[in-house]
Image (tube, rainbow, N blue to C red; front, top):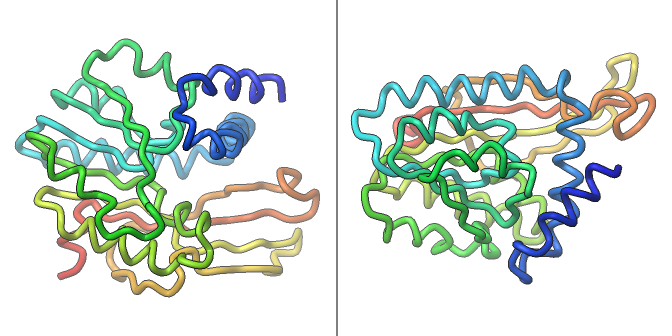
Length: 238
């Protein structure tokens, strides 16, 4: 709890006023990731491994943009910074906890931005103004944006995934598909579609993410997310 409060306090001053209401949730998410290092390890290894492998397939490496960079748990930021001339991390909140990892790299910049903008189809238009954009990564962000705007959830999902398809460069998508809450007997007590009915390709990689093991949210329940990833989101539509 003390570490969470410290990260919150250290991040408050640098966070634009419009985004400060989201700061507490971001600090809680960071604290959970620290507590659940072991449970989250397979998910994080899968995400980082996919991105590390995809780097090798990119012939030009000028600018990479990460949408939903968050606490950098699932990003091989060191590989990105060493490989690309410029790395832009985009999110509503950039916690002070990431400073040590990015501080050694002069080519990493932070961009505070609301990517969903209430399902605005132009929310990603800023990417068009970036010179040398060679790769965009959408990292576990679309389902979070949908959850934050329940009344517009499907619109937010459709808008984000559609905008990714319109980008003129390769796009890698990592996203939660659905969740299940199970008891100690493996009985499903609750479940839900985190993309709210948006049809997804059957291709791609799939894995489970133990988001909340027993005792994290409840003594006798655990929450598991099912994740999918596509190294090239445009090719996945074929």
